[in-house]
Amino acid sequence: MRSDLDSLAEVVRERRAILFVGAGLSMTVGLPSWRKLIEHMGEELGLDPACFLNSDSSYQTLAEYYRLQKGSIGPLRSWMDRNWSVTEEKIRASRLHEIVVRLDFPIIYTTNYDANLETAFRVHDRPYVKIANTRDIAKAHNKATQIIKYHGDFEDDQSLVIAETDYLNRLSFSSPLDIKLWADALGRTLLFIGYSMSDLNIRLLLHKLAQIWRDSGYEKDRPSPFVFMPRRNDVQEAVLAQWGINVIAGEGENPAASLALFLEELLTRVQGEKARAAP
Image 1 (cartoon, rainbow, N blue to C red):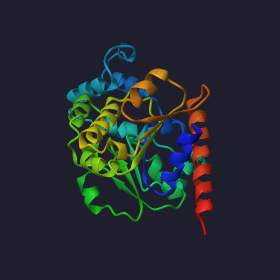
Image 2: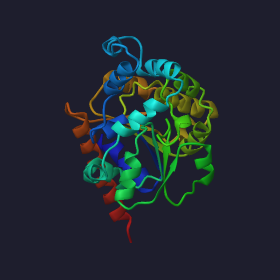
Image 3: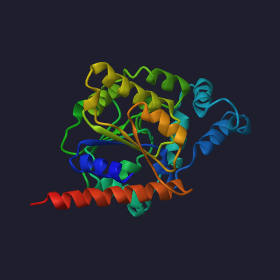
């Protein structure tokens, strides 16, 4: 882990890394779990949520049914926007969000719908631009951290990737945000945090990136991605390793504490590298 952290800290310091943020980061500031979302959709539709909590149907399937019954995902988006809101004070007090800002990634991709990352940059007085659609890509610039809302943003219903059809369409990786991701990712190191690595979109993305580099004939020049996992998982590590992915495993039973320890250590090493590089 020490060697991997040193390698990762070097590319982060040189701003040659991209951060990919999952739900694990938002849950540290009290955002509801997917279970709460399923319960709400079940109640809105007059269904027993318990039938979905332990069934083969995912929340995406239930969201697809919700859209069919309601005519749009709008009411669900409004509920999520209200209930997945965190105060500025809570984000300001979040050490994890502060570290993410201080690590100074040039580009951050997130599959979270909430605005916690944007709020973190705002309360810590760091410039950023939000990108959720094609128009945002055209208006973006490189002078501030780009926060790409890869699964959409509450301010744009059309951008949300939440129902099953949305996910299936996204598997083609042909949307404007996907094209931007390929361009961004091929020349930089990716770091994934806050993921259980069960998200099919993310796993397929990692597989496709590995395939692109293999087919290019320049696989040895590939910037290897890093995935942080709160605890060791030999099965996941072996599968991800075949795609050229470095897994950094934390310790302990508390995922939030494990992630905090990792980010603190990474920040310490990045700052140490910066201090040594200073004239």
